[in-house]
Every structure is written in structure tokens, then in C-alpha cells.
Length: 70
Image (cartoon, rainbow, N blue to C red; front, side, top):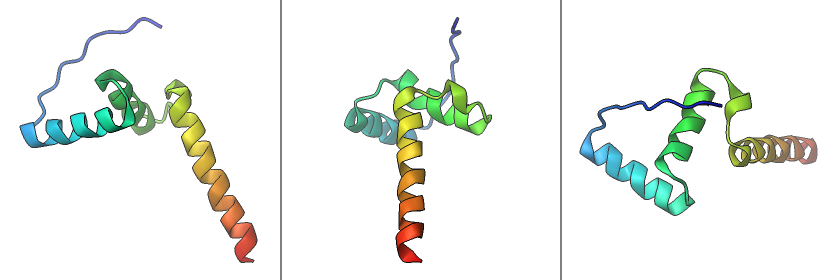
């Protein structure tokens, strides 16, 4: 898929937090920002595979907890 550049202004403290998070997760800025944007607009098919699997794992864990609680 063709990509275009998007420039935004981010306050320094927020940018610092974002960079720390991305460094900890081993993600690039593009990878780290695309997932929340795709989620926000409801286009979950465009989420990176890692994010999609992570969400499925969380939903599965919640279902398993629900089964074991009953």
C-alpha cells in the first residue's frame, strides 16, 4: 500500500514519553503511531500483525477468565 507523510506537532513531554514507550517495545515511530490511528478510525484490518495478535490474546484471556470464574 502506498504511504504518505504526515507531519504533526507534539508537545515535548508527550514526544519523550512516546519515544520511551517505542524504544521499550522495539517499535519505530511509524509502527507505534499507525496502530492507534487504525484503531481510532475503526480499520483494524490495517493494524500491524503484532497488534492484532496481541488484541486476540487479550480477548482470549478475558474469555478464559470468564469461563473459569463461573
